[in-house]
Length: 191
Length: 191
DNA sequence: GGCTTTCATTAACTTTTGTAAAGAAAATTT
DNA sequence: AAATTTTCTTTACAAAAGTTAATGAAAGCC
Image (cartoon, rainbow over all chains, first blue to last red; front, top):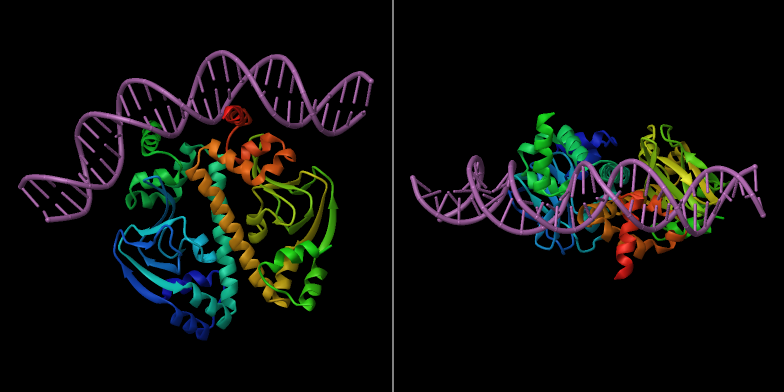
């Protein structure tokens, strides 16, 4: 149940068995069906999720349209981070795209855990740093690359998601319309 | 000399006088002229800077062109974070845009400081979280907004930089060409 | 099975941005 | 102060993406 979590953490910090048991005691397991809303736009994100199994989608809502902010895959921490970290109303929603198994911890429990297991603070710092680097990477792709190049990179690094996620959700993540994505894909078929 | 630094930190954690003295001992002050390269593309960023005075620009180099990744103003920590945090070759350069006064700490000293002053770890986590939230915010503006809206927001929130930074550097930060920025500005004059 | 909804593609047309080049204004250097 | 470089704007043309709408295929639902 917690194997994937500690395997992920072990790349960043090493916990003793005692620490692992304390950490486990603060997480709960939750089975969530497909198309379930974990965090609603406008509400405060009270929970942080570690994805044992499944796929989560973070999205903005502009007018009546959903625009993908990020797709979280297995063995990642997921939340509407800006809302969770600052405990302010979320400007993003978080849904499941598949039936998922999640490890859940609340904001308050996480802060208690920082005190009980100080090494957890190091872990949190490193995860925040990773997420920052990742956000920078995506941002740089917006600044440096054309939509076509962005699609190519996405295909290369997340090809498996193409079978699990509708293309229009990927299109909005790439900052283009489904129509434009379709054109790009056709343009690239020839080459 | 360190007033701005601790004033900035005090919003996030509270240090004792002893802790402050230890922290001060690990930073050095550096005066740097305008147009000075602090971090070169391809080199590893060994230092983190706190800006007492001045303006720093982080940028990518594509072909022969510089593309602004971020502009750091007074009283912020600045570096090529991906390179500094992972100690890998930087894909960004960092230059001064004005004569600047910087507080400097090396990667190794920072990690020593984490051990001597554990609360520093909390500060680092919170700063990383803030930077992540900020990167998310900029990214969301790329996903949700048109270049015109992005310019309006930049003007509203960083209007003072328009007098300190050439427009073409801002244009590339907004993901458009100077030509396009000029057109947008002209379009908005009428309204 | 038959129905509805969602999804992906295509076409026609409009809008916006990119590219290249040239000239004016401002800043910097000598 | 003059010369040089940098910065900013403008123009004309090309390329790409957005918008709207229609079609067909696939998936989900009763």
